[in-house]
Amino acid sequence: MIGLGFVYAVGGAVFLAYAILSATDGGNPKRWGNAAFYALLAASFWLGDLLGDVGNGVLVLGLVVVAGFKLMGRGGRPTTSIEERREEAARRGNRIFLPALIIPAVALAGTLAFKRMPGLFDVRQVTLVGLTFGVLLALAACYAWVRPRAVTPLAEGTRLMDSVGWAAVLPQMLASLGAVFALAGVGGVVGGIASGIIPEGSRMGAVVVYALGMAGFTMIMGNAFAAFPVMFAGVGMPVLVGLWSGDPIKVAAIGMLAGFCGTLMTPMAANFNLVPAALLELKDQNAVIKAQVPTAIPLLLANILLLYFLAFA
Image (cartoon, rainbow, N blue to C red):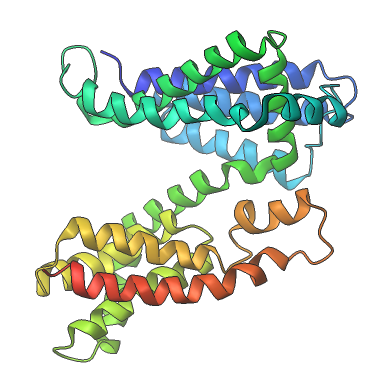
């Protein structure tokens, strides 16, 4: 049956290719650090189920050591020049983006179609399987249309990952941290604090505390996926769903959107706010955050209203 194992196998293969390309990159003085980082990620994708909790914990510590001791650097493998890219972009125009549209189209079609084939696909993972098929089909389309060298897509992927660095895995790490916090009972503590803040009998008060809590906790944790388990367990489920009979799907979805408003306003979301500033070589490292705040605050207010008027209909 095609399911999450297929997704992990493809992801692990990509990271293994990055590790091999990094190890053979003579232009990168830190190539062994890069290779070790990507090899650990490949091992996580391929062997995570076999390593157990302790083994996976050691693997994560290995990633932290590589990142913490700054053992990664940008690769020096030659790819296409800026002039070649500009010439290619000018020749193909906006059609260059067509392969990218294959990915969401196949993901949507796969989500709808694979559910009708429970004997072949794991119906719980059809979206991720469809997304993976979409990426593979888009890659095949690019090979047929642009005709690059066989290794070029992986080399460009390695170059992009080297530019982002360790922050590329920050969302997954923070999401895991959120799950750990939830299992440790932090959600119950947050719920106890929130119950003392929410005015008695006020549904709007509960909505505001939940939405602001999602945004605020996301600003602290750096990722809405990390804040969600804590806030939903502490306020969303017991108060908005349990006490006020809210729709759990709408409470969860709009709560995540409120959390992403916090993502726009925090340097803790390094992969969203600090990495782009570094890639663009901006003088002000907080320039991205400053540009996003005027959008984030009205969006947060809009999500509070959406949650109040839609989740309890």
